[in-house]
Length: 198
Length: 198
DNA sequence: ATAACATTACTAACACTGTTAGTTTTTAAA
DNA sequence: TTTAAAAACTAACAGTGTTAGTAATGTTAT
Image 1 (cartoon, rainbow over the protein chains, first blue to last red):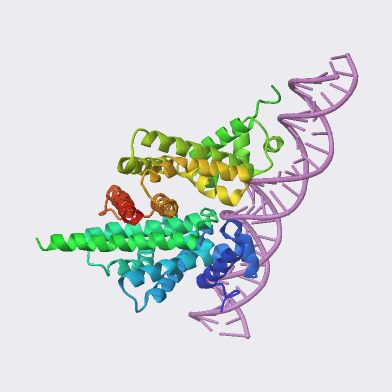
Image 2 (image 1 turned 180 degrees about the vertical axis):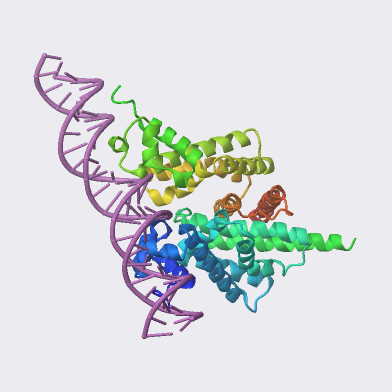
């Protein structure tokens, strides 16, 4: 083993922990170096800049999120799967707000072919769940964006400090939104199932 | 007039322009000082820190957004108002992505009574439009959060670089989501209008 | 084992960042 | 015109990401 055993994996893992602890905004390369028992400049033998770290942590976070979603929906289908996925999504964002932010920041960091692939893979579970409904391909794709927007929007706003009006329960609000999504899915199914028989 | 005529308004206005030009992440107090023909340290006679600037710019942005929405929905009602508001919202985010971010960042900056008031005022138009539908107060409040989540979620994701899959039109996707919201509003109206007659 | 090579860590420095202390200039009021 | 307040200045500190150049380390081949 060379040097102090720094690997891309160890760096990404340590960085993700540091980001989770101190917050994405308070993260610094120098503090990461300290935690790895290395001078900051030495890190540049393994990375080309702080963007590399964000990329790596983002990928890691994508995978974790997807794992959590996968686990949540396993064995479930349709409405139950949508509910389970939605709540797992929310739990992940609440428990890992800063990691979640690294996911959101990924596209502007890099639109390379392989990273795009990873991002797509991170949405696989969500895609699978939406595909449980019998809809035309195009409608599935359109609804998928609606669904993602709802999940991201709600959780991002909540994390940002919105939805703090105490007299309206936030759990109720989330469930109300999810049930709305489910209702829509069923309507679309009816609508396009009927037209299929033409 | 004292000094170089720096006022909170001028500072906020100049800062907002600088943020729009260079991006929120590349904004710096020092560059703001240059643009105001002042040394950076001198700014601290007028502000207590960079958070003050973010607060001021955020407030300014909230007002601009609300003005844009107000203008868009003037004279319209219900479905037409929802559509107009949604597209005005999107246009604002696309034209002022960094100002929009300052709005989202407001709550974590400050939860003072007066700033909370300003934030609420910024949502007034949206609230007004949703209130055009005849729904129980609680349902209105719940749907309001769903609607906000959709608008924010979609636009935040798009600005972040998502929704780049070329074969699915992004305009179509947005309209699909909005029509979904409208459909839901009408259903809720039916549902609670019927139960009203019990 | 030892010489050659690549890898990796180091020190020192640069150009930035936000912010504070202390001092001087400018402006308005008595 | 003196006095007091307001607002500008200089200088500095501690922090950031990053680079160049150098020393130490590990691996491989002779």
